[in-house]
Amino acid sequence: MPCPHPYTPYNDATLEYLDFLIKEERVKVQAAEAKGILAKTNVKRLEALEEDRRKHEELIKVLTSHLNSNDTSYDLTEEGFSSWCGH
Image 1 (tube, rainbow, N blue to C red):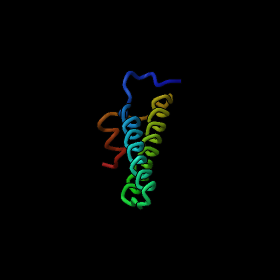
Image 2: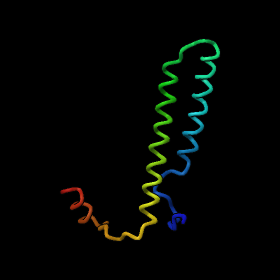
Image 3: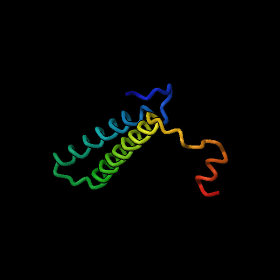
Image 4: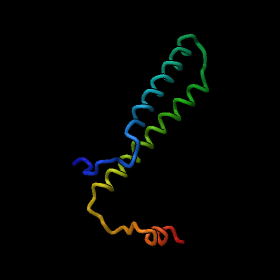
């Protein structure tokens, strides 16, 4: 069931942007490999981008799941938040 809220608590364009950056970095790595060049910096950046994408997907999953749950036990007032933070 899709999230019934009109706004998402995350940036919808982030995955698309990360996919673009990953694609661009893969092209650089492949071009370097084709020339027999070791592109350590580009490989590290590619791995970091892929990890960022995995983390963002997990964040989306958690936020969407939480929004779609019927759990209303959270006190979202300032006092409730302060007690949750331990202040």
